[in-house]
Image (cartoon, rainbow, N blue to C red; front, side, top):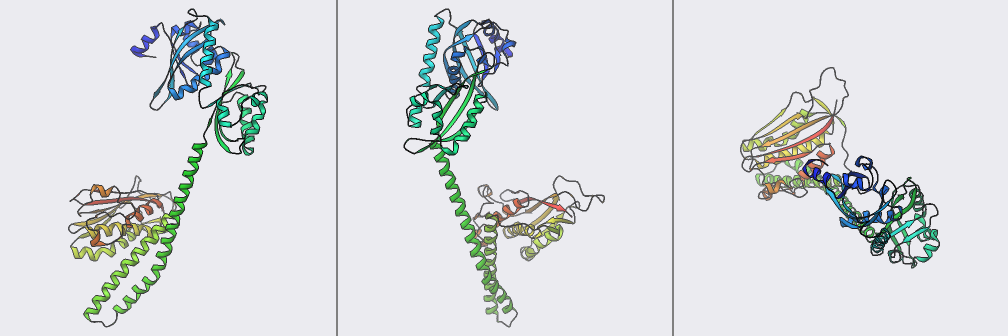
Length: 501
């Protein structure tokens, strides 16, 4: 310990130490070390159990386990000095935690050997720990690692196992008969490990006399003598059946929700597919009728039919794409394509609306962007067209611009091979439209959400376009986002990964 407080602790006549929850000593002030006949440096790094009288080590270990739950503990413990003498300490332990660091135990003790007889104090200490062990809901065990004999078994066993303790104390290995047959081998393997001095933790099932099953969680830890030999195995066992039932219910609910989502997606895909066929016929017939002789009224009616059918066809396509993505049945194509040509194809459908509104619609692809990349050109065009289309629809004055550049990558050189590592491109679509309210930006990429709720009835759509874009961008290994300010336009940006060609 350092600093002003560290100096005070170092000079304190109190017996003060710090150790980990497993007992490893991290600090011992000179007074405590002297009381045990050591220098502080001789104690640091050793386990505090080394300085405790062997008969009470299991009970002291139980107190440390309880400290994890109650954060503070006090009582009597018998310690052994370097020359083998036994002393009785009254200890007070506090569990201390620090963000990002393992917890530790701060101990403050008083040597009470000269105040009361060691035998009396030790007896009282044992009684205190026995009272603790017999009044907790967890089952506390002490086992002999050599013979397997159960030296102590707390009364909570009878409540959890639904059977008396005495037969188990008389025939220790009859315990195996209480374990579910499928878990017996696993439990016996852990018993063997604990007998070799390993700490163990496991979950297993038991079968009660009435035939019901209970889930058990158990952890064990060894108690060693001064030579390091394992003399006892201490275990704490807890009934976790209710927790396991809750986990199973949660799993079933999750599977049910996933099944419902799959069913919904399959229904959407089926309906969308079935709707597309007649709509394509209607769209095709309106094109054919448009080439015949029609009067003004008939041509106006035909235009309305064509616009409505195309709108329905787009909706059916959106629903089909969305259901495929949700069901993870949409695979990307991998083939060479031109980035510049794909950007132009995405812009072409909106040139007419831009001219009608007097908008400037332009694209700028950075020189270092390769002419050809490898990926799914159609899905990239779909994302760009959706974002550009939204910008053109909601912008009445100014411009809509598309910018393409490379993310954190140098331009390719002539010496590079034909097939190279992947490349990440960044696409930005900027507009000078009304901007998007902050409350809408937070959920703009969610299904059935509209960027401009006040104008959605004017432009139609059900709010699937950007949700599909977000999922397609994710499939292409990128991310999508939006920046906007009311009255000053919006910028949609996304990244996508491609191979070089």
